[in-house]
Image (cartoon, rainbow over all chains, first blue to last red; front, side, top):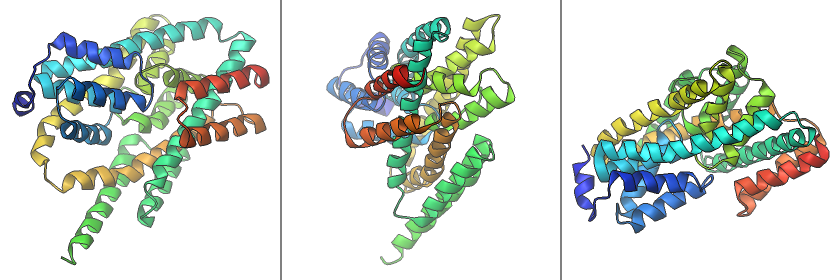
Length: 192
Length: 161
């Protein structure tokens, strides 16, 4: 289905090479660094050019699911179709799964030790700080439109305080955001 | 829990299902599993494996596998399918409208995640200060996420035992 994407690249990598590439990234890179790693690897290997990658990044961020996993799947699909997507999925998900299980086994064994307990509580506070930083950073990007700021705050409140289900949130508030964006884009076209 | 959801935005829903509805884990455990998810490489939401592990005491490994597959497979299938159509909308203005239009809801979900995680982290002046300092360091410096979490853990050993 992605024949156009495949023919545009010079070398067609093996499925094993695709899985290995994403396994090496997913087992070593953290947070935002993973996107940069994927970008560097796929462009350096000649699997796709930067524009095609950036297109995929946009798509990976819009759709549900972890951005990194979506991005890996996109890249796999572009170079080797659905089989490539599956290879990329395995490469990007199996190593983190194995690592988190090892970390979890250690957690269940040592969590009752007071030092480990203190460290874990401290780490959770750090993770909360990272999430807070992320929320602030993302909110800053929305500052130019008061309607979006209202939508953002309303979403946060209905989810945090009233536990609104995710699907309903995306339909109501995601839908409202799309309508707002559509009306704004039309307003911009009028002066032409 | 085993439905689909968007990256960071799914945290409140996971908490609702795993802590409130099914009571597989406590709020404290949830926050700590989330932390482990942030500490290990790869997608944070892989911590769903640990919830699955706790949810099925009889066969924890199966629970871990089921939770991870439930977390990753549906969204991945959507990605593959939509990608096939996405290319056709290459020049369509709808692409930007959809991705920009969804942003406020997604950012609101991230704020709800902050609130959700904070239900399971210690309260008090020291944790609040560490949270604020980590947020500022993340925004203003290039210090890596695991390093900031590890430093917070060191504070925890001293102050949060």
